[in-house]
Image (cartoon, rainbow, N blue to C red; front, side, top):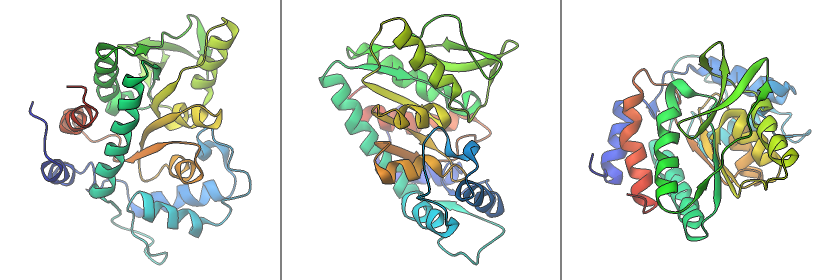
Length: 259
């Protein structure tokens, strides 16, 4: 697949609803912003937000700025949006950090809480980083979290229950990996590429973390605003056909010099 231009990728993101008019409804977004502001740790994705984000309107303002949701508190129901230009801008920032990882031959831990949508995006990025000389961190064996197994599938750490890869927002699987590395006397990764609580936990522990987030997952965008995450890429993280993410991955790898 050829590397798309910025304009071609932007058009593709809108056409496939990875960005633009996305499937996540406005009332769902606002409910999550409210829950985060009310202190529900499930929506903090492993970050310690303290008492800094107790006003849901402040959360909405950050999401409008960094994700591109509609910046109107009176808009309560119906369509919401992700700005495709912000998506591509964030991919460019992510590519810059990946270039540094390659230049410094860093160790990189790759993980996903959304295997149904983003597993192949992460897998292809891990493959490209390894081919360029980075170490892809192998997680310790026998890890457990949230009544499941923390395993590595195609170089990507995931949560497994009953032979199925699970969608999870929990930071516990990443905590199990990082604690397991420490227990085994192994260094922490130089860079974490992830999403959901996997990324939030890593950023909350002070590691360089970059990742992806949907418009109803505000914590990672707040983390980026505060500096706990280096990059958060806004996108619908579970479009019906995961192959629609392929042009985005091609663009990222091309911008990072990994093709």
